[in-house]
Structure formats: C-alpha cells, structure tokens
Image: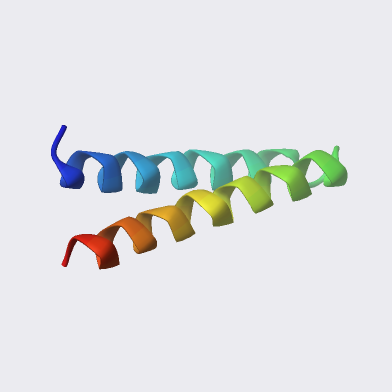
Length: 54
C-alpha cells in the first residue's frame, strides 16, 4: 500500500474523530476527551508518517 494512502487515511480518521468530539462535547465530556486524544494521535501519526517518507 502506498504511503500516501496511509497518510490520507490517518487524516480522514482524525477528522472523523474530531467530528465525534464536536458532537459529544455537550453530553459526554469524558468521552469527547478520549476522542480528542485519539484524534490528536491520528493527526500526529499522519504527520510523523509524512515526515518519515520525505
């Protein structure tokens, strides 16, 4: 699988998780916090993967 596909997939995953944070913030702040951490990990993974491929 090309590295670009993995990078794009991680960015998409981070976006979906951030949407979950936005949706759950008013009702379940703890779950929103967990989703935020996961989104940051996915975004950081995408950046790290991109920097390692250049």
